[in-house]
Image (cartoon, rainbow over all chains, first blue to last red; front, side, top):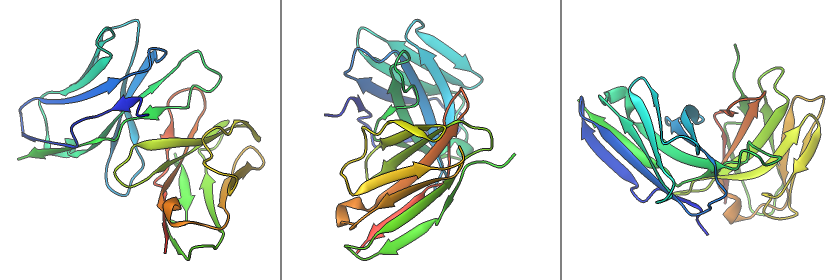
Length: 115
Length: 111
């Protein structure tokens, strides 16, 4: 069963506009959520995270929103830049577990930002 | 500083052969993880090392898969009698106490 889902395989936006990437999860035990960005032929790199005690976390152009009742989170990038073009993975974990690095990933969304 | 490195970057092998994939974590990182990404899928957890011990092997898909870590540093993932469904990108990550730092991965193709 897919515990973390990214239902949009791809997204295309114009430079300067907002990019919104969505992620849904099913396991109510998840209490820590992360977004990773991946360029071709490179490993994923950490972008931003949010704990379930918050509903928003902001870091520069990147903001993650968490709606626990809907089991939904989203990543907003504003303004979008061509260098943001990459695959974005949503991931979730249980922070109190003995293996906090065991992340459950979504399938990824490929973002293309057009100049 | 140097990031996580993996070798080889690409490996093509025939079905039934054994393969070894290597990971060099960031120096001083005590935790090491193996993940794999099959085509069109998200990353899938395989195994976790803390030092040289593997307290969580729950993601290894079969007994054909094994991993070890020596000296609290380099790790090797071994796949015996490879099958076509083993074709994937195998990613290694390390961390000290924060977020995972991933290597570039090894693309394994089983023909």
